[in-house]
Image 1: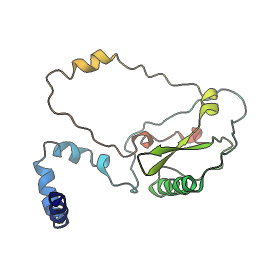
Image 2 (image 1 turned 45 degrees about the horizontal axis):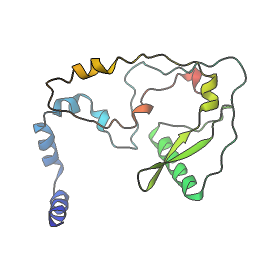
Image 3 (image 1 turned 90 degrees about the horizontal axis):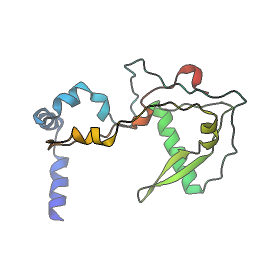
Image 4 (image 1 turned 30 degrees about the vertical axis):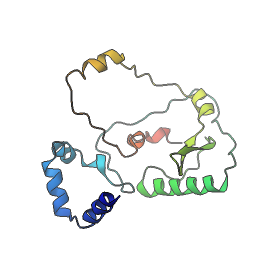
Length: 169
């Protein structure tokens, strides 16, 4: 326990210059310098540097709209907080679309909630994209002889490709 407190007290004395020195000595520093947005702080607006857009193609017919579900007070507060953060950082915007799906709150760890849309009715009207995934054997062959593995947490990676303007509603 004392080691933990010593680490916390020494971290409070670390200044920005020493953090830059640590990063400069890291074998991943060139990757982090080349792609600084992958480690940006939550809440900062993102810049789109490419022309890729997500298209949503639906079948003919009226928009699908489902009734909202009632949420427990703690889930409602968590959902409002999450959506306010998403609007402030630019990953969401207010909508007046005729399409609507109910919100479901899933348990996130021990003490949080993750908003999830119940898109079953919308998915029934959406023409799916096809992206075939290679067989796992091809992937595992590339790992032979590797000894260093890294996991970089891309900030909400599923929200990094913007939706085409005509498909937003």
